[in-house]
Image (cartoon, rainbow, N blue to C red; front, side, top):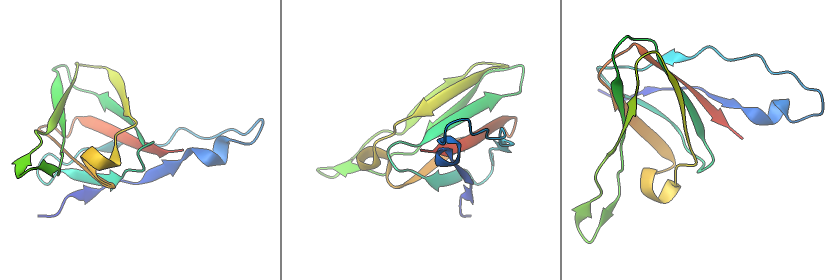
Length: 113
């Protein structure tokens, strides 16, 4: 099945002096199909683990060099924590970032500058 797309929130709406931006509601990662989002190379992911156990979010690297595939990029998100992942090179991760996670108790919010 195709990866479930994630909505990207534009940070430029909060760039005016004194602007207030509401905190977007995060989306649970799709443990069955994976997820995808746009990647500008400046994209920020706020990853929240709402579980009492740590989970791994794996960022897919579609790049091959000389016929060899670059290994995917696993990121451990500790239990009950929030981590930020960002500035993911389009050359390595592509303009459409794909990710997988074994649990839908991990939520993500995608921000674009």
